Length: 96
Image 1 (tube, rainbow, N blue to C red):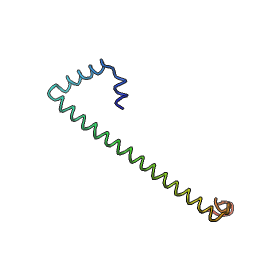
Image 2: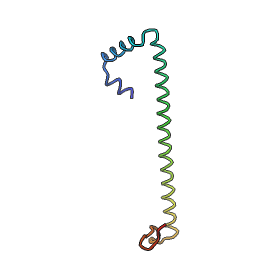
Image 3: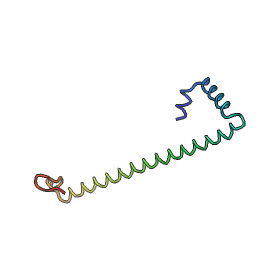
């Protein structure tokens, strides 16, 4: 993300942005403002990382569940061996 920001903004634009921030915030409050923005950025990054981990965990859990279902279906078919019972036929009234 930072590479995108730094690549798309030139030196002159950074200089103007810094000058505007310096005028708006003031030189005395600039360090504390930078610390505050840095802590918010760190919190945002941690939250984004936690969200990403949760999504990956859910994906792994879904993959395991799908594997389990596939394995169970394969075992049921091997035990029974009758292809007609593998998939219920609604016309015969085999609806589950």
